[in-house]
Image 1 (cartoon, helix red, strand yellow):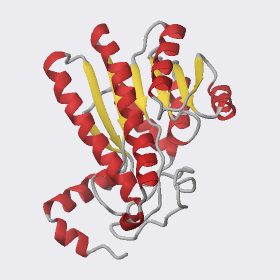
Image 2 (image 1 turned 30 degrees about the vertical axis):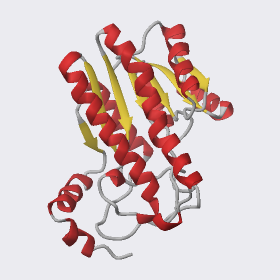
Image 3 (image 1 turned 90 degrees about the horizontal axis):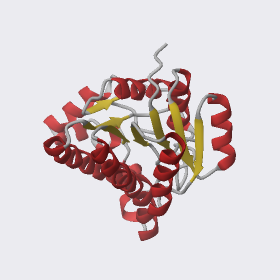
Image 4 (image 1 turned 90 degrees about the vertical axis):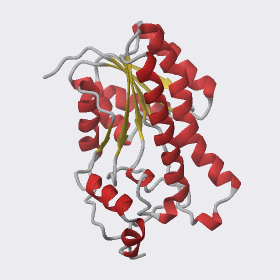
Length: 257
């Protein structure tokens, strides 16, 4: 068993991928800072993980709350090695029916929260001279397989762009500060059920078998150990993305909605 001894902050740490990642990292001896809105859910995860776990009740769509997560992590453990922007929420709505409120809500939780996290922790990493930022995005940011997830996909596409821009900026001045992008496909969590507007049955071809949160968490743990620029967590998705970008029209003609 690896005992890395890192301090890892995970937003959206009360359920799904975040909770599973906490379990993986806690088992190997990492110290954890778990942030989410529900104290009860956070306490349940912390209890199951054991070890050194700090829970922070926070709404990551509020910049002040994200800054507080950083400050409480530093206060408790003295330093932070890894920050995982994992919080997110979906929406089920056709493009033409999206309201201002829909779009604002989805951008706030999927894009702005991650930006707040980047702006909170990266200056600290720069000052420290090292650190690892991981942004959890989605395969849907690259390939529009679920049109009713359009606002979510758009937010994640914007997150991909911000992540890449930050990584290039840091490579010039702070090469020891790593920035990774993780793109899961379909994951068997409550994410779909809790989406605004209700759950969604994803279309058929191209087939993409769902993964468990534990599988995705294991891949993220691997990225922490051996940082990479970006990774699709589902083995099927890299080839699908390549097919899409090689001939968008031909790819979309194969979709059956």
